[in-house]
Image (cartoon, rainbow, N blue to C red; front, side):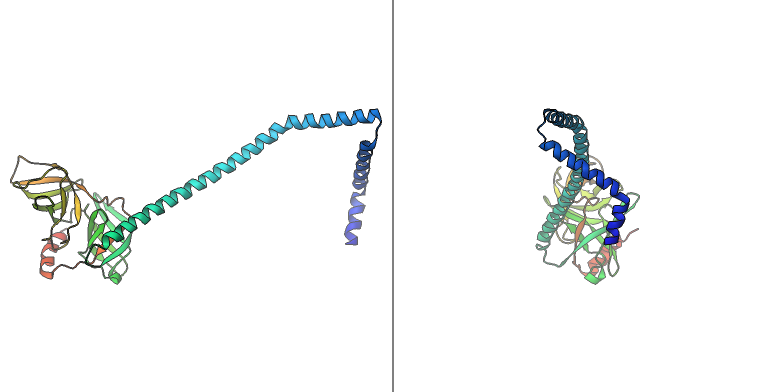
Length: 277
């Protein structure tokens, strides 16, 4: 410690002596009552105040600019956090709604997350994070709170592929919840259609179609969508219906798989259409 002090004194003693005498001089000036000294003190303090006032706006501007940038950064982070919380709230509401709907089914359901969307032309399949380990098999319905999303096409131990309603290879028997008339649901690559609907059927815009109880794939009354337009009311022996899908399979994040296994004979008959390529 003594060596450090000696080194410091040896190298900086001139500066230390200067600082000491300047400090002593300033102290003596404050105690001096000589009129000239008083005038000098007043002039010095006035000059210091004027200089400070002149340069203060520049320092203030720099400080404000720095604080403004900091506040913008914090605002951006808060906005991202708010958007994240809103997304979590939306997901939580969807999950609660789906759980409430799942309780209405007499059969068991499996909650799963969509991990990948596979687009092939105008066809859409979904990959979900549940498979044979959870008891999922091909042909099981996949639903959301709004209605039917698709059918399980293939499953591994941990994952499954869902053939959505936006897939031309998926065809289901559906019925009008109003008059009970039945047709075939199919995707033409652009629109969701119901074909083979008898001309005698009473169909109005806004009518709701659900899966038919005679279907071997989905024999639960699950919502499919609403009628947008009757395409050929004056032609042919069958009507074709343009349908507004109840489920937007391009936007959903979570689904339920209904572990409903129809009778084996009926299932094999309709799966011939389902597996058609």
